[in-house]
Image 1: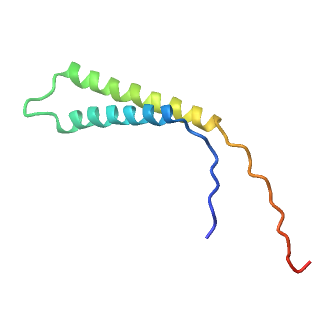
Image 2: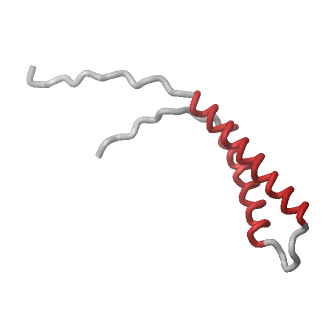
Image 3: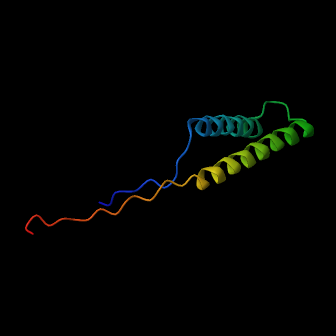
Length: 84
């Protein structure tokens, strides 16, 4: 089994932002999907779609920032043969 090395750092604020944005996307998506007994007004659907789109763009921006937060490479350790 190979050990995966961490590549990116993420702040707690970024995790909180992502969590809030994902909740927004989920809530708006639920409303569009489930709706209610009456059909949604076209402007409501448009507003919900815009909310989903804007939140998704914000998620993309945060992920792009996280990708720029690369961790320092792990130093290469020499394997020492105890027999030497």
